[in-house]
Amino acid sequence: AQRVTQPEKLLSVFKGAPVELKCNYSYSGSPELFWYVQYSRQRLQLLLRHISRESIKGFTADLNKGETSFHLKKPFAQEEDSAMYYCALLNAGGTSYGKLTFGQGTILTVHP
Amino acid sequence: DAGVIQSPRHEVTEMGQEVTLRCKPISGHNSLFWYRQTMMRGLELLIYFNNNVPIDDSGMPEDRFSAKMPNASFSTLKIQPSEPRDSAVYFCASSAKRERLGEQFFGPGTRLTVL
Image 1: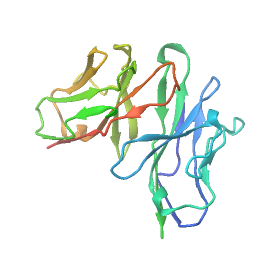
Image 2: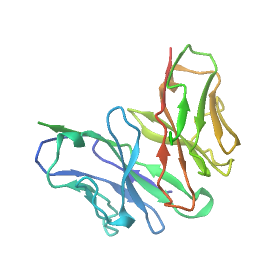
Image 3: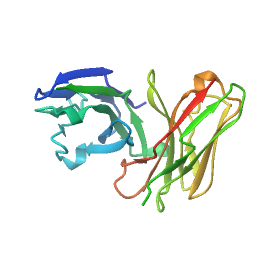
Image 4: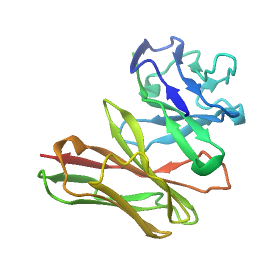
């Protein structure tokens, strides 16, 4: 069965400090992973997907198959980064094709 | 485009009452998902539909929960009878299966409080 683990429920950093939100997964196939973000009073939305290898709002995430991890990183955190972040794993085959499995989420707070 | 539409946005009810949550997915999307969000358990998938057909309902907590999708533009999640432990935010999301698989568009959620 596929699983996504975000070990930190809460993460606090100061503005300008580096931030890393951890995500580990278990999946028997070739994984496709995503980070979703929910800002205060906004809808949950896609932040980035590993397959795009893009940087969004200064965030990057690298898939490490050896460590089965997909950590989200930003070198200099900003106050507007404060939000709930979810890591998600796509089921790209079988009867549950298209299903996302989400981690439990990490609440990031960036202090001024 | 208003995106995914959910109603009501807030619902306060008493234990034992029936609750119906509604969702209108983005036009043209053929997958629809119902999630529940709580502080303790995070975001849990309850059920999802492909082309109006339920595919995976393994996340539905128990028989008190049921979901329907009578057509491509409407879905309901019903709780009968409701219990205080059902209090949560319920999200509906939709996605276009063949395009950008894994990118789901979420509604604003329904905050349910069962007293």
